[in-house]
Length: 134
Image (cartoon, rainbow, N blue to C red; front, side):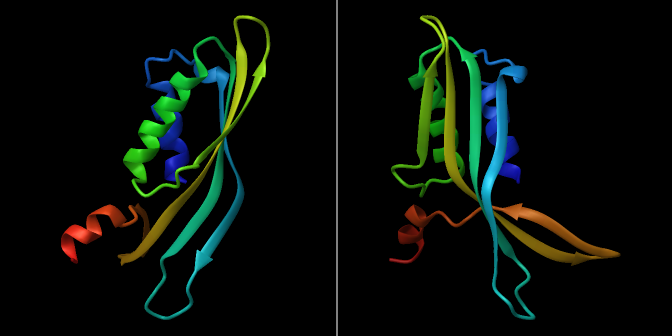
């Protein structure tokens, strides 16, 4: 689940100052989609990424911006309502924020000596298809 690790890195690498021990990242509601057939061994992992930031003292919209910026980079065709959230006010200085994001990773296997190599590939950018196929 490459995107799960990538979103964690994006949040921790942002200027928000979130410490690693204040960020929980996990997947839930996962499913694997696969078409049967001798020539197609690729499959898709769909899941809901769940991020929980505890004791956050910044503005929630700053976190939303960082996550949206990352999401629009990795999935330009993402739904307009891609991120759902819950904010729990701890005190007048801090909140806990829970974000859920529907993600998918496409896995493309390729044969190699001694086995199979699995790699995560990007989905085609639907916005660019019109540029290629009028």
